[in-house]
Image (tube, rainbow, N blue to C red; front, side, top):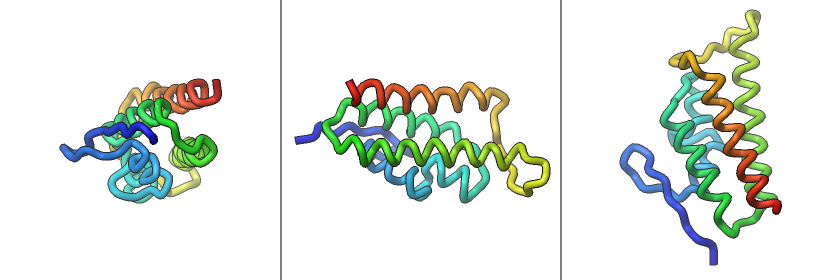
Length: 120
């Protein structure tokens, strides 16, 4: 049976797989929900996503299903930043930290960690 790992979101304990699923679907106050639906950079939601990716890397879960979701999350995040920096596009991300590039690199490292851990 799969080991269940949890992360805390707004004081609520959540299954790490649920956090990834919520980001994949851009719902329930996930990082992608804030980024895509609210045009807002949420440091807390990004931290939670990265913690969930690390937690899921340790679980015995369907690698292909999680990998597809992580790939989609990564692509949609990059697309949001491409639109943000396109001067001809009205989409703009608010509340973006000055070190947003380091924070996005954290997401990249988390996803990379998942693939390196699960595909060994």
